[in-house]
Length: 435
Image (cartoon, rainbow, N blue to C red):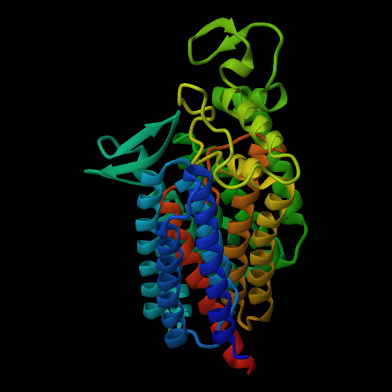
């Protein structure tokens, strides 16, 4: 079976699973199977068939599983969002359509040779810093939950950092490909432009209190530098700098200290200071760590088999949400409750298979820029998943970052579809040359 036929067969399975998922939610809500559940499955199947047609025209030799994996994750996400709020699921579906359009445009624009992006590496680096600066600007910048991550134009709200991540990866792939030999020798003067762009990005992220993205970009920077040079001194040195920086941030930045305290001590049996009221009159689980604690209870309530789609408990008897921002930062806890340990483990395996395919693309790519681009896009995707899932599971301190393809949010969806297109472009070139 050809690559594209494998992709087609996998997408048909994803469409069927989407229909079954929505049917489960409808049955749990209304005890009947509505035609709407079937229509959602058909709609997603048609949408991804259109994306499949684009891949046949533009990247016929590309990996056959990357697109179906992205489709499966978006289907799981929109099904869970529909279960939480049907109106939000409609908005998310619109953003998925826009994401598929961005996916198709990326493939058509760069189908001949995406490597020409390497000639614009410095422009991409400056563009990444510029995008990160936008939320810090007055008027258009918007602060939500203590972080300035969004800009707004009329009724639209955009998170520029999602697209800055892609531009920064392109810059790193181009610069590291050009300088990898001298960087392996440890010549400091060759680190200048690299550290300048990266340092500017880190300063902007700290200014906007986007700590999750700062950790994400730092990880991408270290991983790509290590892959380019093969020198262990970069990740080791970066790890030491990370520990020193974390120590300094804990003592100098109140937001960091608060997140670490919540991570280490989410429960208290005595009153502590509550940042929301400014008084020492609450248990921590009733104030600053409320979201995390309720999320952990939700995960525990899923047990091994889960409650089933549509049967989780996310509101109190008055209809108020038990977990604030459930559809964004904490959607994993909703999935864990309704799918259980077995189901959510299978869900995480989808991300692991995505990582496997992405790194395989990097391994078979022949030129340095393509290898670094594939590794950077894949590692950024995987690290972002670890940061948010690790925070929800209390493995690491919680940061406000989206779960790729699953969390509610338009910017993240569109940016991740561009990541898909980038991996398919690299894969197509590598497979065509090896054929």
